[in-house]
Length: 171
Image (cartoon, rainbow, N blue to C red):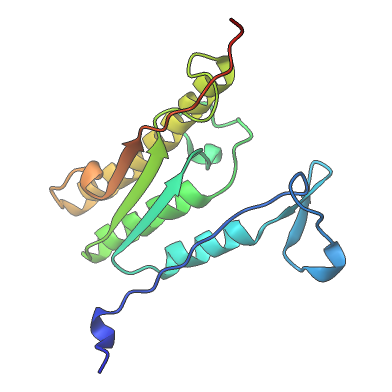
């Protein structure tokens, strides 16, 4: 006999653009066009659905965790608009206000792919910092409003994974 009260549900997602696959708009309803390129937007929709439907926690890994720039405390005019970070922060805020336990675990790369001292990686790290700052700010505000007494890092935990990248150099 399977005890369903102790069962877990887990779903994995993957994204893809027309750089990597031959996408046929006549065969899929989830394709969008962004700057003239086709992309499968089902990943974002699946993430949002899973975040909104989660009960106790969410665990995700992302090499490039940034987004929801429209809510950043500064640089909010950057074109980094997907809503996944704002959705996670909103879920946590709702759970804080309802007095329910909820934690988001987000595993990110210590350095995105590329030369850690290079301009692109440094820019990505900066945007990632703005994303986390926005999330922690919203969570801290909800904690203050409810008098919860916890710390934002107890509700949203970023774990940094050290990933080794090999950089080709001329000898």
